[in-house]
Image (cartoon, rainbow, N blue to C red; front, top):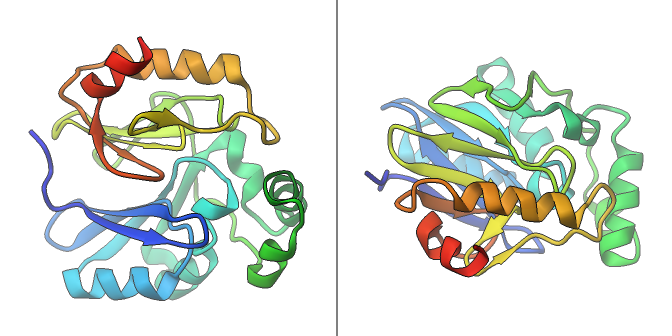
Length: 216
């Protein structure tokens, strides 16, 4: 049931999980390229894969910092997809959105300013139920308003970003966070098939069943 070919890269200041999920023998999806674009490109080269999609579970900077470099490198071969409610984190006007978020999280924007490259526009805006590649999009607000998960029904895997971790969940005190929404999103996830394997935005993998015993 589980896809055993998924590659995990831990990138950036906050140890974000960047996942490389093969779609076929030649193509892959990159989920949450939070930093270290060269490391991501090197891993793809070693796997002989080209990314068809950059899938973003939410727009916080630690999940998208490598997007400008990756998009510049792969050009039109790669489409950037994000839920429309977090699309303000992409595009040439996104600096102010990130500035507010980073200051709230870290107290200053020094980290952002040291790394900033203008963000490209998204190629695909996602909604609840959107289909992209093998994935069905689940809209899971709470950590941010546009937080989403990417669920592959066929292989029984889900990428949950910062909504659900192993024995934990994302913070709700950043701009656009909402605790009530997050717990509704957690309840929704934990009502799914307990055998689904969870690939989160930080930390190790888990299963829906394991986390349901924690949160339900």
